[in-house]
Image (cartoon, rainbow, N blue to C red; front, side, top):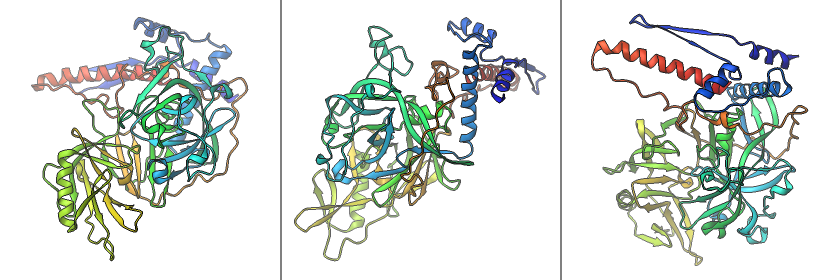
Amino acid sequence: MAISLTAVVLLTTVVLMLSVELAAGYTFSSRLIHGFSDEAVSFWASKGKSMTWPNRESVEHMRLLLSNDWKRQRLKLGSQKQLLFPSEGSETHFYGNDLSWLHYVWIDIGTPNASFLVALDAGSDLLWLPCNCVQCAPLSSSNYSMLDKDLNEYSPARSSSSKHLSCSHRLCELGPNCRSPKEHCPYTVNYYSENTSSSGFLFEDQLHLTSVGGHEHQVSVLAPIVIGCGSKQSGNYLSGAAPDGVMGLGPGEISVPSLLAKSGFVPHSFSLCFGKSNSGTIFFGDKGPENQRRSSFVSLDGNYNTYVVEVQHYCVGGTCPKQSGFQALVDSGSSFTFLPSEIFTKVVTEFEEQMNATRLSIEDFPCCYKASSQGLLNIPSMKLLLAANQSFVIQNPMFTISSGQGDNFYCVGLLPIEGMIGIIGQNFMEGYQLVFDWENMKLGWSRSKCQDIGGTAKVSPTPPPSGLTSNPLPTTEQQRNPGGHAVAPAIAGKATPKPSAASLLAVSWHYTMSSLLFSLVVWLLYLI
C-alpha cells in the first residue's frame, strides 16, 4: 500500500550528514533526526517541553505520519497555483450605505453548513459571527433593503463539527485570565471605530471552500478554522455595519489566511479585488501576476503584525507636497482613506488649488464640491508613491453625494486622523487586485476587472478516509515557530554579525553557520 510505504520510509529515516566547507577551513556537520523518534522526545524534554507521541507501528502513529504527509502534499499543491475561495463563490458584494460601505462575501460554516454574509477586514484577525445573541444587530432582511434573504445566527450546538476552544489552547489570547485551563476560551475584539467591539467565546469548526487550479477541477475543501461566537456586539456593529459577522484577514495566527497556510492548503497569501460594479473577488493562496507592482510590508513600532506599507509621497496632479510621507495600514475594513492630520491639510489644499472650485463640507466629509450644470471638470489625478518608487495610482478619488433636492456633490474620499499612521481604505483600492503576500512580506497590486471564477455551483465535499478526522487544526507543536517567537517569515534570520576586522570574519561565519544548521535541525523537526 502507498500509505504504508510512506510511513515505513519516514520511520526508517536515519542520519543525513550535512557539511559546509568554509574559506577559513572549518567543517561543520549536523545530524537530522526524525520528528517522532526517541531522540526527538529527549531533545524536547531537555528544553523543558513534555512531548507524547503514539507507540511506533500503532494505528495512531501511522495516522499521525499520514496526516503530516497530507500536509506536505497540500503544500506542494499550493505551489501549482491552487486557489481557494468560499464554497458560495469567490464574488464579493458591496451594498453602499445600506451596509456601511463595506465589502462582503457569503461563506458556509459547520455541519450541516449554514451561510453567513461577513464583512472583509484586512485590519483585524478574528472571524466572528453573531451567536447565542445577547446583544446583536437585527438579522431579518426587512432591516436591509438590498438583501433578499434573512441573515443567520451561528449555533455551535447545531453543528456536529463544532467544539469549544479551551483556555489552554495556544490561540486563546485571554487564556491567562481564565480560572482553569479547561474553561471555554473567551475573546474580546475592539475596533478602530469608537466603542465598536465584539465579544463571546471561541470555537473550532469547518469553513467550506472550493479549490481550483493546478491540474484539478473544482474540488470541495473543508478547512478547520477558529470562530468567535459573538454573543455581544457594540457600536457600529449594532447600526448597520457587519450585522452577520466579520472575517478578519490579518496576518495573525488566528486569522483564516494564517490557519489555511498552517494547515498546508495554500501559501500564506490572499488577494482582494474591488471592482467598479459593486462586486469583486477574494482568493486564498493567490500570489498575483508576475508583472504586478510590489512594495514591502514594514514594521509598526518594531512589530510585524499587520499590513503596513511606507508611503514616501502623496501626489495630487503633478505635485507631491514636501514631507507628505507616512506609514499606512492597508485595510479593507475601512470604507474610506485616512491621512495624518498635517499631511491631510497639505493634500487637501493642493487638491483645492487644482480643482479651481469652491470647497464645501458635507456631513463628515470636509472636501466636497458642488457639480455645475456642465458637470465637475478638471479633477486632478492622485497617487501614492510607495517605497522603491512604486506608484499606486488612485483610480477614483471622489464619490457622489446626493442632497435629495436635485443637487449632487463630489467629495474626496479622504479624512484626517490623529497620529502619523494613515489608512489606505477600500475606496482607494477600487479597480485593483491587491495581493497580501505575508509569505514574502509584500503588497502587490495590478489593475483588474475582478473576474469571478467561483460561480455559484456547489461541489459536494469529499469525506475523509475512514477513521480519520477531516483536516484538524494544526496542533500546538505544528503552530509553534521554531524559535518560539512570532517572527515574520521574510524577517527571521536577517540579523548578521558585524566583524570589525578580517580576522573576525571566520569566527562570525563559524557562529552564523552553526546557528543556521542548528535552526535547520529544529525547523525540520517542526515541519516533520
